Image (tube, rainbow, N blue to C red; front, side, top):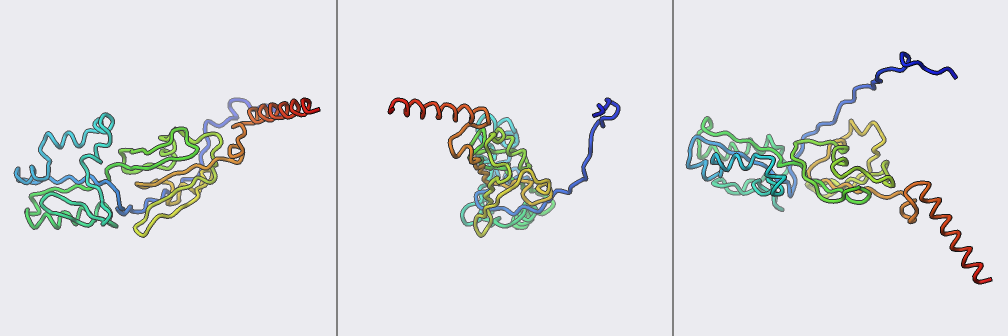
Length: 244
């Protein structure tokens, strides 16, 4: 065979651009929502807990690293009835709304107390919480302080999959208003990029099943499996010799 020179090897190869699926996210039970309300009234600002010192504390990412989940502490959790309870406004149902729709609803309620030109409302997800179980190097619950992360970023936060994980059958449990659905995801399929599962959603649970080689208690690679087989065979032969 003729060897390729360095000039014949391309610097890079490029595949077709694949569009991401960016469907709107609708708020679910147990979502944590960061709601920021600012008005021209110092008295109302104190009611909503957005004095200058409080606001700087809420929005400092370092707080989430040092003291846990800063949004869970200072945000609003959508309860089992789909409601959040806000100062002055009382309970407001946010279940099934996008963050933009939730913002518009809160603005409408607030306009009963303050002129529209005298307040500002911002609503966003308080980070993305998900669970990673099974054949991950680091199992557990994770919170990422971003508005959107891909399934591969989520896997990276869990330390990547182990060598015995089924990468073509990753189980995803996703929460919907009517209940929970389970899907099996093929991480090796390029079509994943354009599917609704490429970006994970709050409260998603990822479960990586082990391959058969792990279920049988054998090694994680050929060498370990071969060594285990030899050891087992040697033990069997020793037992047979002892019997005879």
